[in-house]
Image (spheres, rainbow, N blue to C red):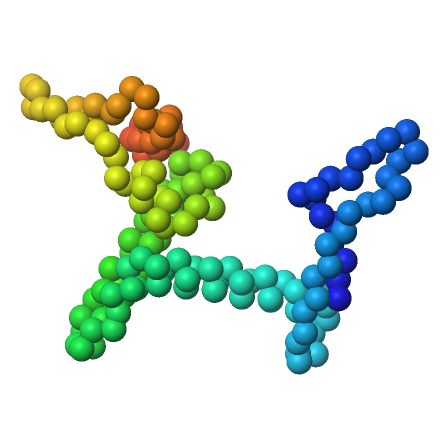
Length: 151
């Protein structure tokens, strides 16, 4: 068992200092002969992988398996490419979007309520004025379309 300081509920600090610090206890059982810190790091890494698998099963991988092996292989390849592109998009947008699920990224950044206008061989995207994700989306757009930095 390892004692971890609970930063979500900070203890109040008075003139005397902390009298009752708030701690969380995380018990875990393992049959590996690894040290506690290494076993906990491996456990947390496993939890991240499990979250990615759950996120994937809730989106594109829900359509697997098909009756054809090559269709499954193609779908899995397309899922991997789109997942990595969506993660990179979230990381470029903001800290919130870097940790968001695939459904949230799709709702905030991909499904854009915009109107496309064409004039003088240019395409203009008109975003709604009161759209709550306008700043995040324009920050992503400016980051991707920024001129290259001088070498």
